[in-house]
Length: 493
Ligand code: NDP
Image (cartoon, rainbow, N blue to C red):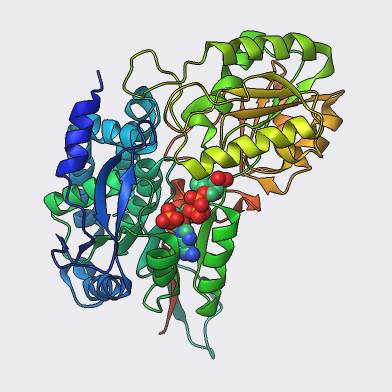
């Protein structure tokens, strides 16, 4: 059973300085910042910000590791062994990690234990297996000036990777970026979120224990506009992998464009969950509720647009309202809590503003809509029905436990509504009709479509979107190839 006091002690005892060249720095820095518990609103610990000089040192150390150091000379099998050792150390401390994540993010204790940590370990192990399997191709050609040739391709590390993570699931999303980059042989500089940096510091501690050579893995806590901006603008960075808002993603893309450096951008969504009349009503109601209330709705794949067939609309809204009523907001460390607190006061204000907008624009507030009477950045699980797809609550990412329910008449209208969005990250179809499921999975514009289950996660499955949801793919084979560059070699024989 997770214990608040154990997690609080762990937070207090963590090293809280930038981790550069294989050690936590000891010198003073220009700034430090408090890490706030979203449930008690108290300071958990104070972390030293990586300033410009620290960013420069981290990039220099990563470059040395790649260009001159032991890391750059290591073969794939050796990198795989290190990743397995890292995964094992995390697994051994999975409960501590999970509780620290609950404390830092405000999510219910069970969620990191059954989702974030198992996924983190699985991702590290998946890419540990890839590390010695990055092969090129031998390509027959017509020869060169009458002479035969031998042509082949090499997959080489793309270079130094900057990984920038958000506060909603920093450990797991961190692993999605760190594991494939390290497996491909790229040194990584991780910039964790200012609001939830603690598990990333624990990751640094365990990376040192696992034996990664100096410079292969660095962690730079700090604010986005300071540490993050300096990092993405640094000419020593070869690739940027970013998860966060479209606004910041745009800034990252501009910085990357200056050196034509590749980016992977995962920028969230306004993902539809489409409930057809033939869907199993209980399974659909449970899945849709999970898709909007898990992690307080602070999920890039949150199924926040709930499209329901007119024939079952009233009955489904009622079922979903029952699920919302059963959600228990509270301290993540209380055993009956099923939904935690939002990350900070700004996010709470943002979510409440969207709720006010939903009411003003004429959607029907079915349930929730207020703050529970308690300290912390809590908001009730909230559902709006009878909404239209043009309302702000149907168009913009709220990143909170707010579902917007819209009726549709037939399959064509369901697809049209699903695709009428600035985002294209994920979609869920709830139906018993296999033919409809496969047909519509092709027609819905999303990077990932799930049928009869909200957002299944697996490190083997590529993840990413289009439009305002960003571009590029994490996870799976695509995720590691994104950390490599393809070189063609031709020998004239
Ligand atoms: P941001 O996009 O600002 O933050 C994501 C990461 O980028 C954080 O590590 C942040 O650092 C960093 N960052 C911020 N500014 C810069 C910069 N100029 N250069 C480089 N890195 C930077 O998200 P917010 O935390 O402001 O959240 C706002 C909204 O974004 C949410 O309400 C939600 O809608 C969306 N979001 C989407 C996520 C997703 O999974 N797709 C995840 C998080 C948010 P720091 O934390 O220090 O600011």
